[in-house]
Image (cartoon, rainbow, N blue to C red; front, top):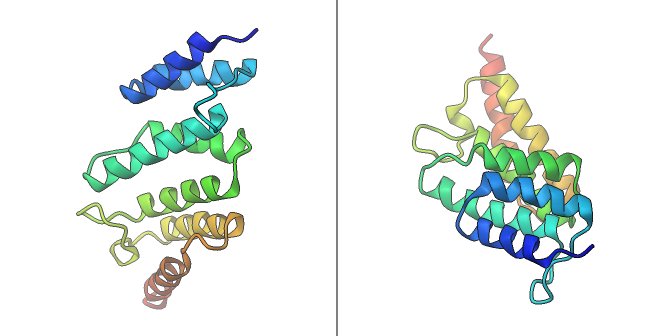
Length: 155
């Protein structure tokens, strides 16, 4: 049965950044097929994904961690929710760039010495590009490839 109070509570929990409870309740609402209010055009998974993505971008820009919430939602985006390709591709790109952070928190392939980590980031960027070709990951993928070559040519 419709439960608009649950949905409004989830929206409020996202607004006040009580993400643990919001994500748990959102899973329940999605499982029950709860509808979003008429003034919100997206469905619950897209709303949650967009909200957490926007928060993660702000946190990363401020030099703060985005975990565990980004990873929790990324797992849902990658394996459980059917979302528009543009939204999913942004998650894959962000996950890759998060792996490539340097000591200043900036994504920089040249700061990474772990080839496996570089390859993982490249796979995430490849998936982002596959989902949405205009996601703008080509330059970073080229930098990753160059860094992998530089690290493996030394050996």
